[in-house]
Length: 104
Image (cartoon, rainbow, N blue to C red; front, side):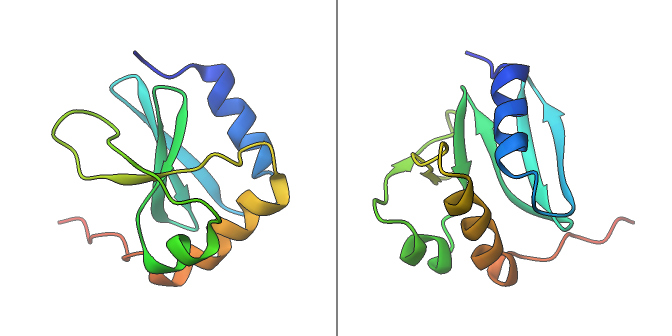
């Protein structure tokens, strides 16, 4: 199942107070970036983020899910209706996220 543009727009709206939130469409799903770093993505209309320690500590309930077959597990974000929670999650994760790879 592919993600809908409506769900992407909802998540982007929830993150609208943060600067530099961008996305890239990839195979009917969406990769989310915060200040140039990959935070996670939208897969099958679910928000999944990288399983970094800061995110695990920040979330009250931790549940791992596969974004697609053959992928590494990511954290499912259940509290997508809580704008303050989502913004805080992205902010605490930022320093622990890897820097983008240099393009050749």
